[in-house]
Length: 297
Image (cartoon, rainbow, N blue to C red):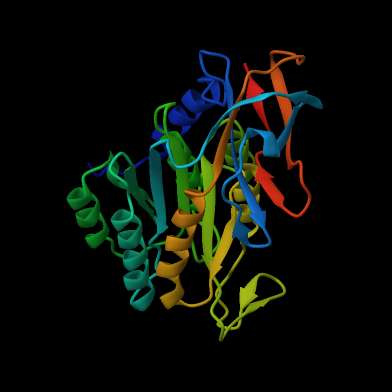
């Protein structure tokens, strides 16, 4: 299904997501925390519950469950198809999306959303590969950029509690057309358990100059992408050239499938409000990337 998402739909959906309590806590009162453990830039494999130290509002918690790759995955691809994404870059973007589709596992699903001055849901969450490939083939580049609105709409597509949600967000420029503010979108992201991996692009021939412009005088500002990925325990990655987009998309999916999901029942902490989380490895030599906290309603 393809649907133009108008301003009224965005505002109404924002209220639903903000008030729905769609966060870490499930009906069984188990909190799930998605983390990435790395040694340098290499994900660490083979870790168990005893390898992590997790605190909730400063109180150490007992990790009762750990998952790696067992849970099905929802991949929400959110792709910038504004006027600057044309020609070779659009072809590279299609190849990157195709690579993600090819790497989906049997129980995984994906959705495709494109954005310029408008948002288009090209394919809702589905495991039908042919539907997803057709949606990619129909992408065209034109118009301005509504990056913040697109990021929010992607968070609203988050799937069922039994899945993990990866939002793969690509953009090559600044927001020029959004209705929603940066702070509002980030606040929604903090209340969601979706993980945002943002992908930008830096052409080697241009580089980024002070003032947020490249040598080709194209405006560039990755502050929002960096903030959004950081708040959701994701990462901001850069393709150095158009031909690197496909490789970067594949890297995102491979890394995400090597993350851990830690489950625990909160003890010794207040039930409501903001809970600050800290996750570390008990042995030195590794780094853990995890969400800063969650809201309990």
